[in-house]
Image (tube, rainbow, N blue to C red):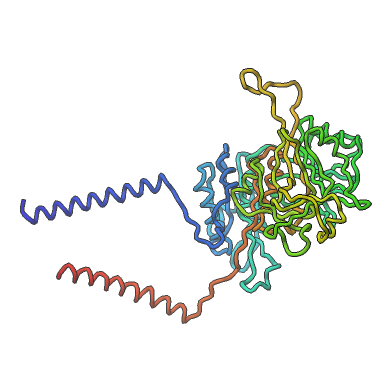
Length: 497
């Protein structure tokens, strides 16, 4: 074969091979879709909890977005929604510009009862996002997407934005795909944290976070009446007065009938001693011991400036699935003025987390208040929270034995409630918000429950002068083509040589 036919054949084979490579690359990229998030704070990377919730979807979800391309939040919401669509084929998104798609917008606005207003020449929809599944729908308000952090206006690197979009979208998806609303009853009547209260004993911050999870909070005063059947869980948060035997029996009956209970006890000082809660005997029967002590963390790495018995960091986590997400995330969460919560040897109750090995549980308050005094107490890792769950007995065939009547619910006992304070829940660098979400999810049997901490980003606009634009134009129009020409000339010259 002469040189010319051989060259033509090589060229044809090369073209066919190149085409096959392009087709193969396109096929593999369609089968193995991957996106990268290059933002500093990973603003558009879905959290593991969102991914778990999307993986469990068994219903189709339609998301309508009523934003124009000129609106400030359009690009952020578009990028985030692309992540949702990439994770599951159960979600479809439709973008409707109120100005460019006026007819379609008007039809859907009437259907979902949405108003709009004019901002100059731009039409703004009152509700930017509507999530539907079947006959159920949920509206996502503008303030639920991106919120300015007014406390950071004086920061040297500019004020911040709280990106709430993922929390709002995932919460809306759960709302339209799950069953009846979940309800938490908040015990009252003994000085517990209250909804609507002021100061450090307000439950409002927790209630707001649970609202994101589509969980209702309803006060319930424990006196003589049983806990309502509509309560999925009962929260007893930091009681200041003793529970009577009759009131403890009401809680025990609720737990034994399938209810779920959180007992968050703080060390309450009375007559130079830690006051009892009233639950000690009931919990001891389950192998759980509430310490009449004050936990003092002596590890400098876990302490915060100030009183070591006040705020300290907890990173020593157990193996229970309730703290699994926190353990994977790393870091830890803050607690304050805690008491010990221990379990009996051989008990099926699990310890959720402990202090460092350098902590002590001090029953002598004089030594606790004056740590300079000689202390004979040996340091150890003090347990601060335990979880109990009914495990049915196994038969001869190693299968759970079915029992008559309802099975007991779940019980979570903690030696601190301050970890739920608003100032700690609002710190995304801590896992307090994750602990609250996991606690609510485990006690309400909604273990895919989502509560995604806001992600902070600098609210800094890119401002370019005329000189900057001319410089950019020169680089794009002149320098880049010139560089390509020089590279091509170099290749040609080397081959010619």
